[in-house]
Image 1: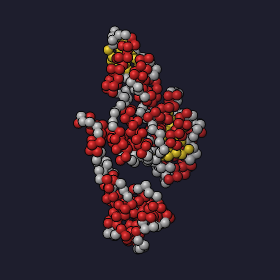
Image 2: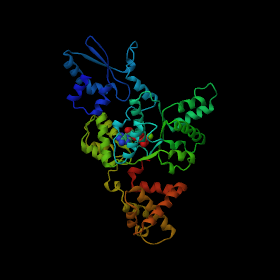
Image 3: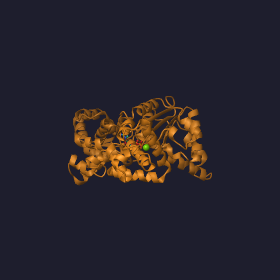
Image 4: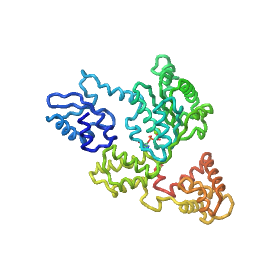
Length: 448
Ligand code: ADP
Ligand code: MG
């Protein structure tokens, strides 16, 4: 520990790097002039430690002992078999059993205005599972941090109390195991009894992406009973979904009402400051050093989804490694040009671009769309334009109304609602919307 602290001070490591890397190391043995150190398996990897910390470790050890030692880094699987595993690995085993990603912890989670509530609720639940909010229901779009938060809660609970039985599953795993248990006879691996034992004899159950069990009747039924059994016994339940319960159309009412018993929190898209903070955190965790203008470039241009944000940074790093070249703005622009349109005018979607494109598509003029004619050949495209303004820009209903010839707020609202309905029921409208989105912003919308 002293040695680790020396390294920490000399290299001015942040708490997170220290905790993530060095604190996980354990000394296995000291023989002759060789110290064997165990690096836990997982994302960290021996190579990383070797590149970054082998020399500092060596220097610190010789300073502390006054003698020169060679250092051997090994993984747990390479520990000679007669030795017993250190007690610290109990936690790791629990983490594995609970299906957790070691990197998704509160320490690595950046709190921003988009996820403040969800984060606070998650911490509260982690501190007193079964007591604070039960169930905790987290909803939000793809890649915004739901899974990361759920794993963080689990890690926190397990760290404080390694005996807690935490189970994290996706709703697909839940469904598959249920189906298997229904199908199989008495001697199979997963019978109904075993299934119920597995899901009811736990302290914390986390079901990720619950939207996938919606519409599957027998799964909903079984989940309903699982929920009741656990909730009745004051066991914590945590659920994530892409929508709030009230918008999950085919969800059974009795489940919906139970989801609303506890606390419902949402995560939305991160703002610029949060995107910057997330990229910087990732830079720190991965031990990169990248110029701020590159980070700013990514944060400015990759806006909708944190997975994509991280992916962009990874892509740049991978490219630089491969080509062995410097990481700078020019490289970032080159690597990300498929994701980010280089054409400034096309990248920023404005209501003017939308109106012009919609008008062209329907063989109308922009003044037709803005004007007062009410024939259906014009109202439909006009409403499409309202809908796209709402979807593709950040402007308010009032401004959309202004741009569309001074229409009032409720006219715009009704137009948007009508198209929202049509998108659900009419293949044709969906198709039109897709084509228009591609025309309006080809770079973004060709990905999907
Ligand atoms: P979701 O489950 O909502 O689709 P994830 O939890 O899988 O999203 O998050 C996608 C990626 O973004 C993960 O790599 C996660 O670590 C990262 N991420 C999301 N939110 C944050 C945050 N607030 N701070 C740091 N990383 C985040
Ligand atoms: Mg997820």
